[in-house]
Amino acid sequence: MLRILLKFNDKILKVIDTDKDQLTIGRNLENDLQIDNLAVSSFHARVEKQLGHYFIEDLNSTNGSFVNNKKITRWGLSHNDAVTIGKHTLVFLMEKDEGQPSAQGIRELEMDKTMVLETRQHKEVLDNMTYSGSRIGILSVLEGGTDQPEYELTGNLTLIGKDPTAGIRLEGWLAPKAAGFVTRDKLGYALSPADGRSKLKLNGQDVTDDTYLKEGDLVEVGKVRMRFHFKS
Image 1: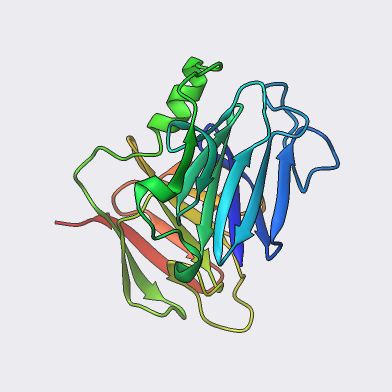
Image 2: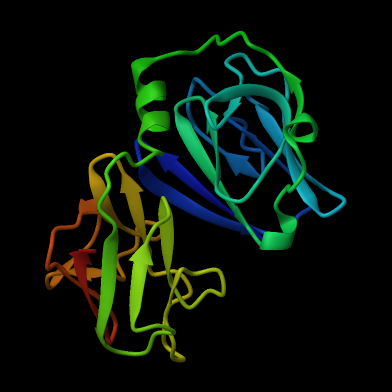
């Protein structure tokens, strides 16, 4: 199963789960993943699964497709790769055996060094994918059903939910599959709702947008209560 997070300015707009061997991305409504933005071509890119690995191919788009800040023609995707199309970013999350383990020469099938679109917003989105700080965030479970008593937030994005791929695994029949995310960037850690729906509370308030976490913040998902703090 492939999970794609569609983001704009670090805000998660949509979470797509798919088991298709092929899907198209573009501005036209006929695409499997439609992005309504003028910087996106009508049929911008295609994702294909071949021999157990996912590849993304640019479909001669006007502004190009970028994987981890490199313009590509065709590229073998790995877990947590960030693909920039227009002003949007797609983060690809996949099972370990679906990631591309091969060397750079296999991953990078063709490269085009010409960048047509190079805006300030484009650079900011890419820059924010990497966290430059040294402090590691921790979520300690105070009560409720989870698979661990404490979580170190070392990745750029951590899913909270009952889903098997969740980094913070909730337990219980009523637990949501995807309650939200903890994202990590240059400014710190932020709490984000899944699909714009508020299943998270921060210090007793519904989380409806990306909200940065502070030392001692209380995060709640149903009956699960967690305290955020930084590792000593």
